[in-house]
Length: 135
Image 1: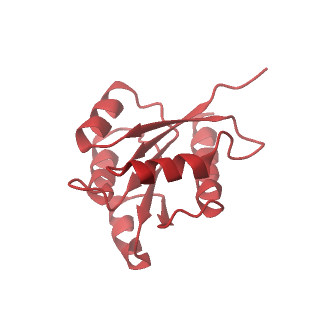
Image 2: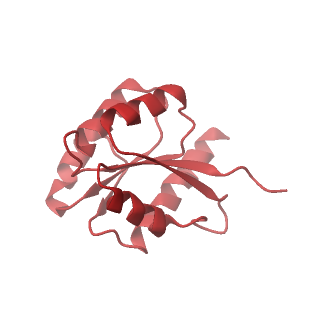
């Protein structure tokens, strides 16, 4: 019996960032987790419309450098506006921006450039926590 895939939503205005995240995540983060299905959006409007239609995502990964709407403001917005919002991971260029990520209530911060070892491990931990809350 196979479990349904968990859904991950990736926001960035830069398609190369979205692709790097998708490649780093792969299809399965860990042997104890179901496969993942990655969905991508490039604008604030697309992110909010997607969440308005479907909040069953297990993880949101937001690009803090996205333009014109950055991931920091969007992380804060989704945490304020959506009940039972999925965990948020913010992608940041500067480690010094971690304090701002705490203001957004993001559960994790991942550095640019995308680290193919760290990002999936952090994502797996956030998804495990989300799935445990659903039980």
